[in-house]
Image (cartoon, rainbow, N blue to C red; front, side, top):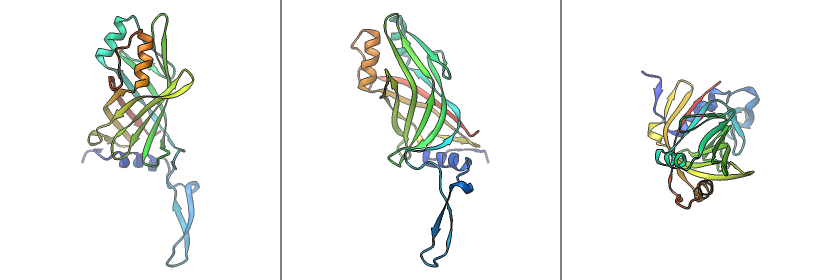
Length: 213
């Protein structure tokens, strides 16, 4: 049987957490069995709500929508990246730094390092250290980043959970849909000097590759 298994998002991320020593002695807690009164150790999974669960190697590539990219190019805007992110033909490749459980307890957050810059000669938009939250069962979530010193929700995202793939200790997610929030549309309109972009406009697609170290 192939090691490539199509699993639910929850199962995929659980597999990653376990691979990083979820059953290590440092993560155990003492419990008492009600029926017998005996005590024992129960492994505590890393990643309680809002805490960093696991450090990973991997990347998320954000590809701007072709029509949006053509619009930016026509306006004289250029897309650049700042390390550890790398510029691609139509966007940027961000380094995944960690996976953590969301504060709601039912979503996971992929944290990234790096910056994508969309700029003309007079205006710029810097998208720094983005995070992507994903619902365990829905595959929907938010794409956030630091813009001008504030953490902003820039896009909504949707992953096809049925198409998620686990290969060994890795997780692959292709063609993740990104739709602009009103704030992202406003920021890009500011750079372009227009009002044409609206909430819900396609921002692009993302590809996620996560591997255990």
